[in-house]
Length: 292
Image (cartoon, rainbow, N blue to C red; front, side, top):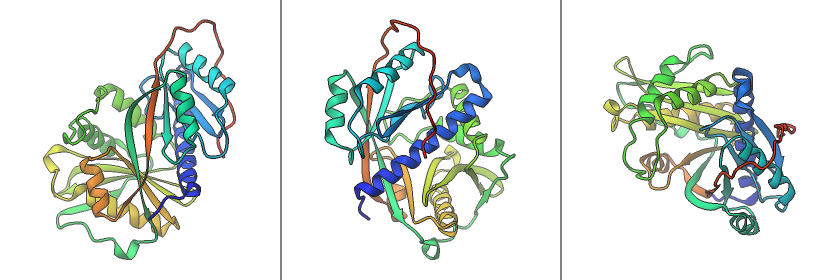
C-alpha cells in the first residue's frame, strides 16, 4: 500500500475530526478547561486542557501555506493557557511548513508512524487464538475497557524507551473523555473470562482509526493485541471502510504486531514543540468552526 498525498490528507483530516470530537466532550464535561478548536491554515488547532493527547495542531501543509498571523494567535492562546504548542506534521506535507516552524522556535522532539491497510479484508482475518474472546462493549459500559487500558498503558513493554508516562489520574481523565465521546467503539479481550486487553475503533469518511490498544502485563505474548486488531479490521470492513490506519511509535511491539497483520508504512508525523512563553496580554479563547 502506498500513501498518496490525497490519502495522507484524508487520514490527517480524520485525525482532525477525532481531536475536535474529544475536545467538544471536554468542553461539555469541564467548561473550565477553556477548550479551543480553531482552524490553522488547512489544519486545525485543538486545545482540550492540560496533558490532553489531542491538544495539538494537525493537518498542516496539504492545501495551503502556513498562515503566520493565524499561528501567532494560536500561540498566544496556548501561552495564555500555560501550555507549549505541539504540532504533528505529516512527512507528506509541504516541506516549507517544517522550515517555517523551526524558524519560529519549534523543536523536533519525536516521530510517530502512521501505518495503513486496504480494506475489505474481512475474509482474511484469522480467528483469535484459543482461549481469547473479543467483545464490543455497550456505549454506557466503559469501566472494564478503561481499567484494562490504564493497566496496560502504565506498564509499557520497553520497546519505546523515550516514552514519558503521565500519572494514572491524568490517564484516567483522558480515557474518561474518550469513553464519553460519541463515535468511539470500545472492545475488550477476555482470556479465560478475565479482561486482558482493551482497544478502540473510530470510523470516519471510510477511514477506520484503530487507537488506544493496550494489554495488561500478565496477559502479554498470548496474542491479545493481534486478536483485538483482527476483530476491529473485520468490523471496519463490514462497515464499508476502505482503509484502516493505526499510529504507533517507531520500532514498538505495537508496530510489529500491525505489520504482521498486513499493515504497511504510509508516512510519519514529526512532533514539533514550541515551548511556552509568558503571555504578554490577555486573549479570550476563540472557537472556530469544527472541521468538515
